[in-house]
Length: 509
Image (cartoon, rainbow, N blue to C red; front, side, top):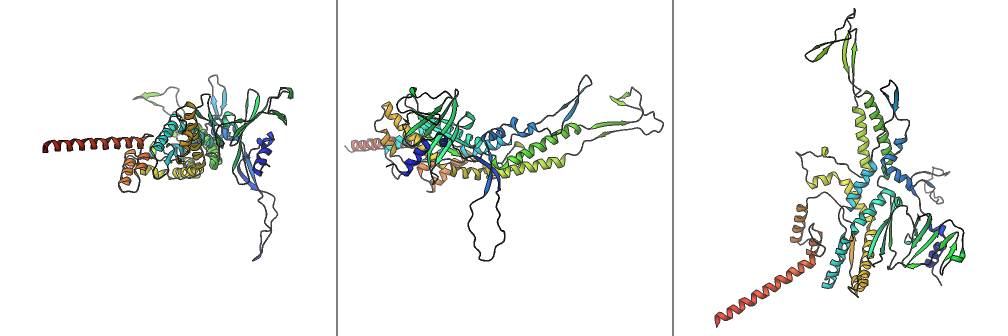
């Protein structure tokens, strides 16, 4: 008899419509219709009510528009001031010159840097790893870097910050090598995650279209299932073993994906600028109004009053106009444009609020005084909001980091078996207890950082292995290299000791 867990999977797999169900992204909302008496007596109890809050849905296409400056709403706002330009033939043309502001891209890039600017941090757990375990651990780290898995990690975080969700799929290529690829909305992949009542991921589905054929690929811990629909009439005579039609979709025979768990890693969250989108819109509107005013009035006007001859007298390179009017009220002065200081301060205040609400700071060269303290610590303090946000991101992405480590570790071991390099690689690598974690990037001086590790190691606060793994110059197999150096040094001491002893014996004789 199938369990409740198996019945839940079958219910999803037997319905393409359910596999395409996706939780929408939300931003803002309002309280629904609720007639609640807002007064209450002392000690009074009332019947509990379910939440009645209605969210506003935001599509992932909207995220794409917000990310691209040339697609911002301000580019299509006809209410902004226009400029009237005189052409050569005496005609006039109305021009509306709009400049978007790419706050969203800047916020995304800054958050991406602090969360993924450093390589993934690995720790080999265990009191006394064997030499074989150390060697396998070094192989794993080399393969991780050679296959650019840190780059894939960064790419996945970038897609999630841009479009709300992203997927990282591990697979074996035609040569049996472990590889990974990114699935994101801007490439045409719609990720639909299916969870049980406890929030655990049960199935991961990907809906996409290729060459006018629609696909639904679904992954569980053992198989990959596929539905296709091409719009042609259903022809059951073309079905092969294990295939069938369900609701107009063609169900294909399931295939083994070759991993011990679901090879598709998904992550969902808010886009990087989610909390400040309305403020970014307001800043762009005010900024373009300010530009139009400055372009119209910002150059100043030379105002000349009186009656003058057509030609002026030139003295010392300057043109002098003599007023010939009878009332002798001629005048000439330069009219300055309106003072923009208040509007500039308003724009600066809005930019500060955007940085605060987005937990993201923008530091320009003009913001750093060469006469003051410009050490890494000083800059780190100015970016405390970015670092705090990144620390929270490390916690949110911990499951992704650990699953990437598990899948790649198993896949690489299986690759070694397929190549014939090690028949026991899968068993050997499974004995490795490795913890993976994102490491927050922050401004630092590498020399000061490495000296700090040396001091902590000397004080006994850090172990030698931690100091070796975390310094900026270590290689993936640094511990193994140190072990070889120590062995060679010991052998040399033994050889010299034997030579000294032999020399002493010769002298006694």
